Length: 91
Image 1 (cartoon, rainbow, N blue to C red):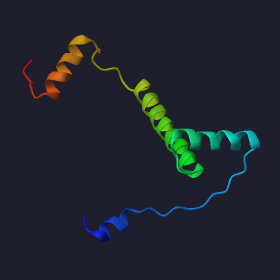
Image 2 (cartoon, rainbow, N blue to C red):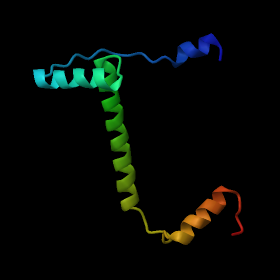
Image 3 (cartoon, rainbow, N blue to C red):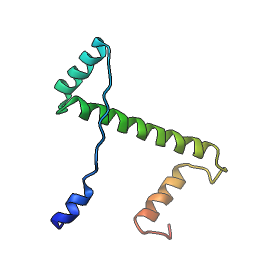
């Protein structure tokens, strides 16, 4: 990849300061030290990404729950799905 393309992929980061009670700050510090994060910011970014993923999953589940019924999902359905994924459409 050309060097100029790499520079385009770097996203700009804003700064946000947060205040935590001592027991929460200690908890964050323990997580950073014990789980391999370089900084508390990395840990907080990971928590935010996980929350974003959780919200996306929740939306998908709600959309699925409110969608129209489709064919039943049983052993035959999954066998057929595996066959189609493997390129064996006739089974």
